[in-house]
Image (cartoon, rainbow, N blue to C red; front, side, top):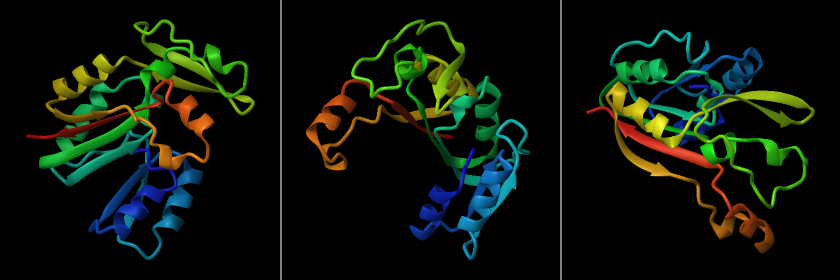
Length: 193
């Protein structure tokens, strides 16, 4: 869901997935996704996560990487994903961590952040983030809200990760220490029982 250029789908197929179906709302990204999947057993549907026609009990797994926080509502999305999964199906997704979406005040300096301002955490809704000379709209919700929406849709949450950095992925200690100060990713693993 929100597959972007489908690079992740390509990696899944090259790692043994039998089939991949990407859903992307951007025409430009959809074209890139189709190019990345050329010659592989996959397809792209040009639709938003909200407008996609979710077939019942069709998929073994649904994934989404850093896209769901762009949606104003998640309850109906999670119900649709639950409906489209086969029995024992998995839903794995990541969002920008709610500690970072609560306030973008610390991002206004445009420097690498050494400190983060967390404010209005329990005030959910639209946030406007400055990003490369533009304003990007994201939707802040708490971890509790994600969890409740998932369980209300019928999912069992089987895992939660906050993306703790690992030293081997950073060239220097200073950047590694800076990135350990606050989580930037929140990932859920869920199953349909």
